[in-house]
Image: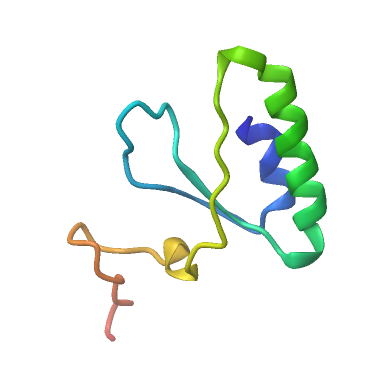
Length: 80
């Protein structure tokens, strides 16, 4: 599924672990690409049938795409 969606995103980032979830990924999708992103997600869901459950949530805050330290704080650039 991710391979179908990545071409429409400017960036991706792993999301937090979710119990019972195989993969949790955030996609940074430009507004202009959103219709194609949603169509690809719908097509993938139809193809997966009963084998997988795709859930889309959003929009999410952009800080999902900011590198962080292990404590979850935004990482500081060297010398900052």
